[in-house]
Length: 632
Image (cartoon, rainbow, N blue to C red):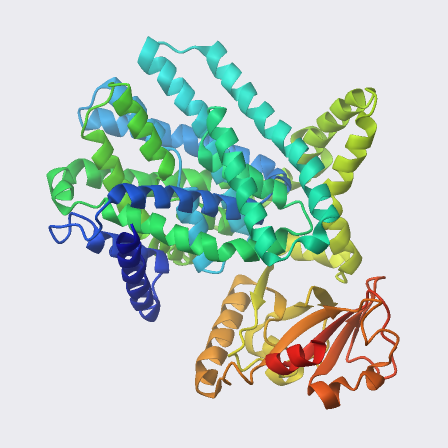
């Protein structure tokens, strides 16, 4: 086992480094690594036990979906509710029809055609999430639309498996069984979401001072795996369980911290998953079934682009978002393997269907990052060739959909669902003791928003205008090796060079909103950038260049400048002293660059006469060893 893991990680590391140097997505490097260590490429597998790799890969899918839940909670899903439902519905109907027609053209029977249609109608949440993450596009508008559509597709997959099983076993459609499964799924998600939001944030708040990084990591992963077991026992997919727990934890005030702690684990097992995908590639199989593989691959790519873009357009999104969404969903994913296995286990599909679907999945996965890049030239082509009347039709339809959803609550999913929930809770609250639990649930559900609201400085009107315009908001971190570190914003001249604007600096958990030109950036700062997609791309290039040009001047770890934050306790020797009297500059050779008070006021470059009081949080800049020596 250790030897297999060693071979996988070293091979994946080398190939991903090569792909990084070539400017290619790392996920492709993992797939190539799998091809090399697998049994098909070189005639002999470098991995002794492929079963272990499959198990690790399944764990990788769980952590990827868990991270997706942390990034994209149910509340965010509700915000794109109508878009996700219309987009996913269009894709499912269109791709199932296209898959069944393709199967009949290839001479396959009706049952194989039905199962193929089911396999082609769902894209891979894992692949899309990884591709968007690597491209740094998580905060773009289309990313939220994609994730919403993918989650709806995954939920539909559960229902589809029930439908296919019913048809395959009894050769008839049982509507009653289907409705029962849909109701069971809705009840399961609602029950655990309500229980999770009521219990988990309360627990985290109560034991917050005891939850160091190690304990919080173990606790979060334990909750994720526990929900996975519960989902499997209830008859649902393990991926759904991981996503549900991620979505529950996304509503806690510890969400960002958990996401940061789990990321290394996700990266390790995620890499193994993509290596396991590469190990399934058999060149001989590609040659034997080259015709159906080629035809189905073309159908998947062209069909997903067309139906994905069409469904997003029909939901009222602009052409730019529709094309970006369609070009991101050009693959079939993990549920295709599950459905293929289902057909094999029920003995209703041909044996060659599974390897064909695996090959199509690998090819489309490999092509996904490249096809995503074609969205921009395609958009430019349409903008250059669309007539003025066609533009007006698209713009007026999008405006009409937007205004209708705002004017008519029954068409606006979040409002409708909130009213239903309000009605249910009102009736439940009549029961003794339930009122207290409901208050706890509501308080926990919106705790993160209230905390963010207390620290926000951007006016609501400004945010609304940003959302209605073609302006995106992205979040990046200043690396220690960047030439940005230590420099004032006015010297960097970011707005003039890229067109992007820094609207917030997050430092040690403290927000500095609308920073001025004299504000400096420090290593580890997270900065919120607003601008068009072009502006954000130019800024990312500028940041990457700052790292490349400063590599030769990177200080050694022993004397590099870092940021840290400390809470002043009543027992602290600094408590009750002014910053000058702490002599932190003279004795610790570091400096206090910010002070946050319990009332959520934050002072940058504080006056030396400011008195440090209990529960104040100070942001300290200096060499790590000297900071630790001063604070003991």
